[in-house]
Length: 83
Image (cartoon, rainbow, N blue to C red; front, side, top):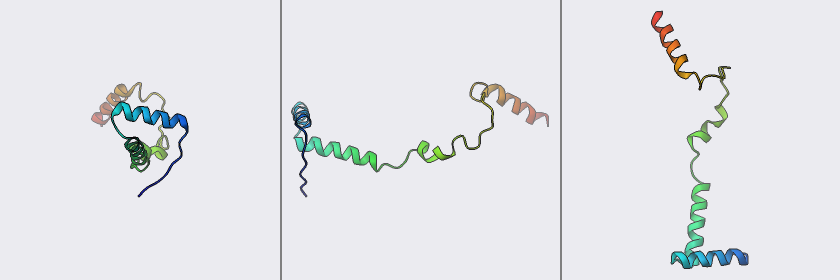
């Protein structure tokens, strides 16, 4: 299959320079760039992206959890062991 694209003179120059520097054809440079773009575009969402809608949805209201996590954990464990 063949596709024709129009590039600016600046882009054409950059591709030519890169192709010469990397000892590749201009076609290889463009195909590699498109492959990278499409792989990123169609990549499955990351765990972060999957959970984004749930972040901060069920907050405890406490703003010190990350700073005092060890102290809070110790308190919870002590409370659990005394019951």
